Length: 319
Ligand code: ADP
Ligand code: F6P
Ligand code: MG
Image (cartoon, rainbow, N blue to C red; front, side, top):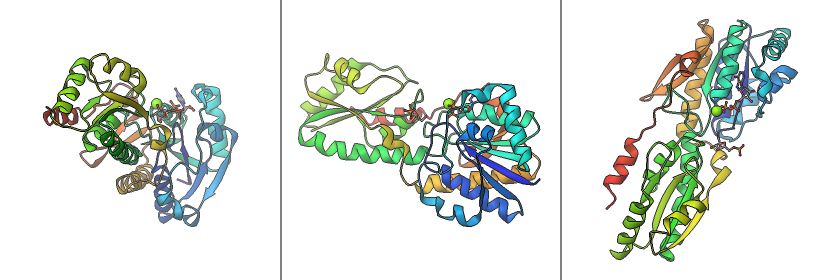
């Protein structure tokens, strides 16, 4: 093995930089060179490469976003384009690649492996929508940011006896909503994975106000609908004041939490060890806190298992 190339792809996520740092430091410790590939697969094909040193990744443990930048580059699904990428890698003496991204990015890692460049995928997305893992890099920071925002929303909700419907991110996956809903003591958690009854939610809120409760919080996954539309539906069944709020892209930014820093570091370190062992075409995941690997190909056959029990626990604490 000569040099490892590393790229970030798809939506950025807090902790991606910590993973790049861990890969770089572990590789250098093992006598390997590391090359940062900027702008995901677009930069791979264009040869936009930067040599990484222990010094220039040192500060990355605490920074959000991805300093390697990301790009959408659908052209990489074409074999001729993938081959151009492989030529660039060979020209720069890079014989292995680590990809940090979501399911789309994993397709690229598998393609590279099939073309002779052993590649490993690390799950980097706030959405937690990747099969065979119960954690993705960035999830914890995004949830913490959304939870802190809802803590602030609760202050104003209570002061005015209002119900807030808060949209959180996650694309089609309800994991952020489930975690944030439980962590912020929501009165209802609405996610794409579960059916819901607006009338029932309105009834619960109404009786809560009648019993002296001074506010209501509904955490709504963006994959279900917009908070504004949900508010319109809800107010057909309840007589209270309501506001819709969208937390938005702030969930994607910020300094990673302890959990994201540690898990990103563990995963980056592990990915280098897999490459050193001659492995490729694998996705790193985490189950019950333990690192695991799965064939990327298997991932495409599986669906992500959400921890829906979080909703049940929340409901058991709601009247
Ligand atoms: P994510 O990785 O978060 O799912 P995308 O679906 O946007 O994000 O994929 C990220 C990038 O991965 C794409 O812009 C493209 O460069 C690459 N990619 C996506 N699908 C494929 C594919 N079928 N084959 C090769 N590369 C792909
Ligand atoms: O995949 C991460 C994510 O932030 C989703 O939660 C959200 O639906 C989407 O990306 C937003 O995409 P964009 O940054 O293109 O607006
Ligand atoms: Mg995706």
